[in-house]
Length: 449
Image 1: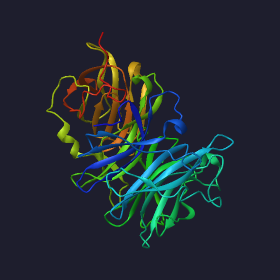
Image 2: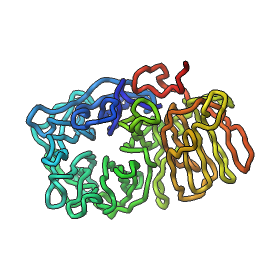
Image 3: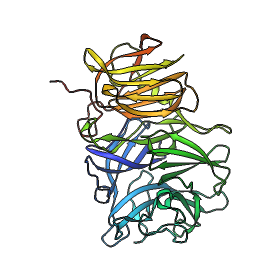
């Protein structure tokens, strides 16, 4: 249901599907640590495979830093592999070192493989294929030139690359933008002025371009300050682009889009964890979450909904306590649902979700606020998912809130509305790999003496 490599954390990732239907994820990986140095600890890509986008099997490391003296000698960051001929091409971020002020020097490189499973990469040359153009983008301190994403051009036989960059015409704190470049052969690129430059974003990371069924385009971008991601739409790649607002709440980051086994279009994203698997631990790189259905329409903004492919992992309804569970709650007014209690026999809520119609929140022990979302429309129903410490809430079918809570004991879910309490039946979640015993294992609940 969630994935990280044994003992490590997952950061940005890419998805691909082989000809036999097998999925592979390539991901940045690093250790669990409070002081994470991404220049020394994100120096390779892990790889895992899956038949269904839910159960992932680790397959080891697939790519790493370049030789000393090259543009990718210090670190390799976010990548994008795509089919090319009988094999694949992969664009990736290389870091050569630091500026005098300590900022990472970034550029985009290219590797090829004769395979389609995400392995056996060989670099194209010894230098980058695309670098920030100082006419439009910062190239020194506080620069950005990473997270490439390449698609076929819709106005030529060539290619378009979207890149996370920093708009040189704006103050650095609001300079986050999506740069773009074009190429006829994947190896020689012409850089253009920003594709999207909102003017109110610090970093616009991990851009994703997806062509929809009606021929229009969807762009997803992760927002550094909010730690969520937003959507833009356009009739063609060159725009005009219309901002459609948040698609993932705070805590959901670095999305990727892919066709699920049932043919639907789904989004996977990362979510953080906490060092020491405790509420007091610092946030760190985290886990890959389960798929969510991408819903698009001509008049409505894109949204993420529950993917029915997960239903096969749910058990029969029960009123018994379950640490990993899904429950549905209808609303006629304000409601608060206790999911876990402070002690095995009650002693007050340790994890609860509340909604007054327009505001949706989660609280931890002593009522501490863990997360909150302001809804665009009053909610009439909630779906709540808990997997260990991870919590997701859907409001009227739309993914609206996610948070972490490592406290409390499993208990029957109790909803309080209008002064009356009722038990909420839940469907337990069957974990794909329940016996893992390393730092990446799902939180098993409170330890027993």
